[in-house]
Image (tube, rainbow, N blue to C red; front, side, top):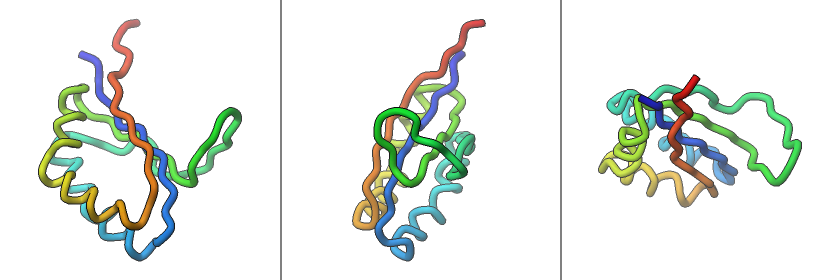
Length: 98
């Protein structure tokens, strides 16, 4: 079964306001079997546009990735993030063939 992924790109304009969002996420993601594959780090924009932060979170499958996003816990945490950042987020099914 193919894994599911969140791919997020974020610009934060209030670091202090953003910190509670970051602090709450690990427990939410753990509940759904999510783990960080990319969380910040060095990057180069070689085509198109980018944001200052990039995140990839892996979940056991696409349905679980969607369930995490739609969970009451994460929906409440989005409200913490939104006043302090601009984000692009996609949820995508991974490739599962050889």
